[in-house]
Amino acid sequence: MLEYIIIGLLVLVIILLILILIKNNGSKDMIERMGRVEVNINKEIADFKINFSKDLRGDFEVLVSKIENKLNLINDHVNNRLDENFEKSNKTFINVLERLNKIDEAQKKIDGLSTEIVSLQSVLTDKKTRGTFGEVNLEYILNNAFGPASINDKQNIYSIQHKLSNGSIADCLLYAPSPLGTIAIDSKFPLENYQKMVDKNRSREERLLFEKNFVNDVKKHINDISSKYIIPGETSDEAIMFLPAEALFAEINAYHPELINYAYERKVWITGPTTLISTLSIISMILKNMERDKYALIIHTELDKLGVEFNRYKDRWDKLSRSVKSVNQSLDELHTTTEKITKRFESIKNVDVDKMTSKKEDITYLEEGEKEDEAVFN
Image (tube, rainbow, N blue to C red; front, side):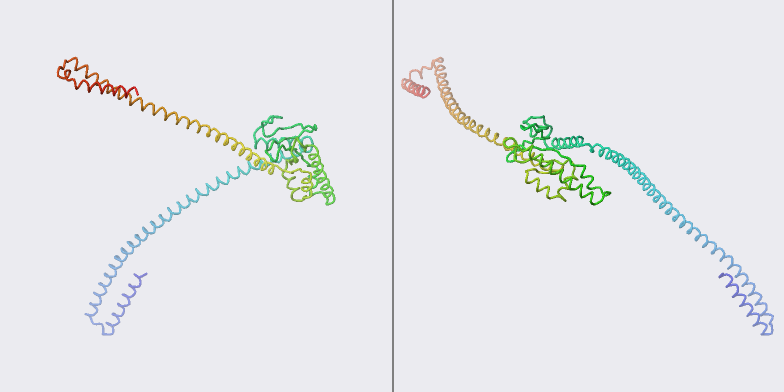
């Protein structure tokens, strides 16, 4: 576009020059000059077009190269981002599949659990089966708290299915420390009227009737435990009623405080699985502390005896040390005398006449020998 503008300006200049020449009566020299000017201008225009085309082509090639580099960089960056996003999307998809598989497995377990619950409900419809379930649950809790126990084995903290003097058989007899004493635990499972009481499909009047029946069932169990398992002189003056279902225990504590008071008046404590575990854990801790205190007393007694023996050993060691010291001193003196006698025998053997004729030395030697012998035997 710039090239065409420049050419237009040059053509305009030529036209103006021609007009000036015509106005000046068309001088021949001027015409020749104008011709030469036109030729030069055309040549310069041609050279300008060539140079301008070269420069424009070079700039265009540089621009194209830069654009291509930029496009390549953008393309690489886009590819990297796409690869990263694809990798993240792939990982997310895999995680989603894994979670879906886990959900499917959990759903299968829930379905299986639902089947087991239905079968458990069908089992618990029978009173005898419910009683067995409560006894097994009670024994499981006792085993976790104290370990297994043999029947009627009073070496353990409890016994299962213990027969009392009145002929009643308690599910468990717990030999707790004082002041609790021997406590009977019996499992009760008043389920039928409770299930009907909490059934939302029944009318309010029916549910109130079943609630009354449920309260009567619990009171009957409390009376049975109070009359059968509290025996003066054989058991403590209280007993425990174990409810194997937390829902029953929660229902009584939340909505039937009159049953708690009724049981309290008859010295019967109502417990669920959680509260029974807590009670047994406390008793177990008390027993362990008592056992630890007993062994600590034994250790203290034995340490006192050991202290007496050590004092006796120290006295005898002191006596022996003094005796050994006296014997060592006597041995040293005996060794000195032996050395002197040896030297004297050596002198006699060598017939040292000068020393032997010295009467004064003999007397001195004899006196020293007598003193040494007297010291040794003393």
